[in-house]
Every structure is written in C-alpha cells, then in structure tokens.
Length: 257
Image 1 (spheres, rainbow, N blue to C red):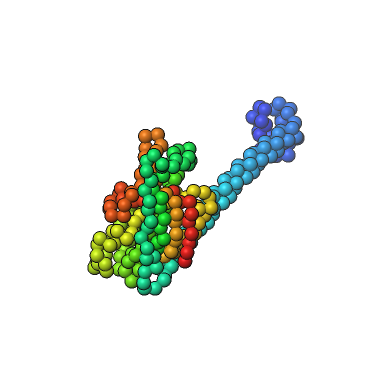
Image 2: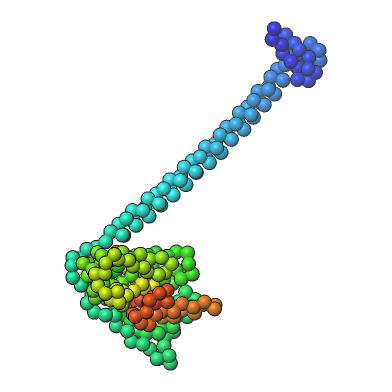
C-alpha cells in the first residue's frame, strides 16, 4: 500500500491524507515544495542541455570552418600547381641583367623595420619552373615566396619535361635520369630566387603567378641585417648550394604570358 511520507517528521501517512497524522504538517505545503524542487531540477537540466547543445553547435561550426579552409587550400594548390604549357622551344632567351653597385653608392631601404642594402641592380625575364610558399621561418616576413626561374635552355619545355624540380628549406633541387642538356647549363640557366615584394601590389602579382608563366622582375639584389641575423643574395649565376640563391627586392613584377 502506497504511503505519503512527511518531510518534516518522516512519518508515513495513507495516500490522500491532507495533514500528517503524527505532526499535523499540511501536505499541501509539502506538495508545493516538491513541485518547486522538481521545477528547479527541470530548469537545471534544461540549462545543462542548452549549454551542451551550444557546445555541440560550436564544435560543428568550427569543424565546418576548418573543412572549408582545408578544402579551399587544396583547391588553390591544385589549380596553382596546374602548369602552363608553351610547347617546345625557349621562351626566355636572354640572361639576367646585373649591375653591381659600388659600396659607397649602395642604397639603403627601410623595410619591415630593418635595413635592406642594395648590392646590385637586377632584371630578369624567365620561366617559372617551381613555386614554394613559406610561412613560419624568419625569412618569410620578407620573402613569402621562392621561385625557381629558368632562362635560355632551361625555359625550353622539351628540356624541362625531362627534369624533375623540387624545393625545400629555401633550396631548389633537380633530378634527371638522362641529361637533356649539359649539367653546367642546368645549374647556370636556372636558380632559386627569394622574392621580396616592394608593396602589396607586387605581392598580389606574385600570388597570381603559376608554374610555367613567363615573368619579368626588376629590382635589386640585396642584403638584410636584423639584430645579428643577416640574409645575403648571391651575386653570380655560376654558384650552387644553399648560398647560391638570389635575394631580390622586387620593385616591378609582370606576368608576360
């Protein structure tokens, strides 16, 4: 048989009792308290469910944004790596033009809070053989992109189809199973070049360049000094290795085709 238990004295009373037979406490007040407690408990449960739902929604939105971001990056990389073809034959016949500047006449440029020293005037028309984006190294605050550029025989598609080109850690590597041209020409008619865009306009142009484009870049070969750290351009096309890259302060960048 069901009983009503008094919350005050703990006595059991028959179901339907209006007051406690032991202490005289009205059960109406107890019922109100029980209802209030139940209501508070329901409110707490509801609030917890709301917070849980908000967290789930936030997590779903965050994951969705990450998915969209990675998808966009993937699409960009796929299309940016879609090489432009020109057919056989050299499309950049001339060697880069370089005019070294006497130390007493070297121009100083304030860029990102540091001094850039212009070592030589430089101009190049070349084919883009590879592109690498950099984000995390110290150098990326100056040169966010490295281009492998080729001219002369290294702008000929017939030659390039037989050479595999890669980039890593600010250096460019090449591999071929059989030399389509002498090794010295591969080394002297191509170079990994760190590009420092003069302004946002030049940077936007850089980001639109694709592998295979014929580009024209005018500016300076430079050296950067920053709190004991320095980065200096090579001043010859005949060297090889990590120190052989050109560091170009690009004042003009054009996509010719």
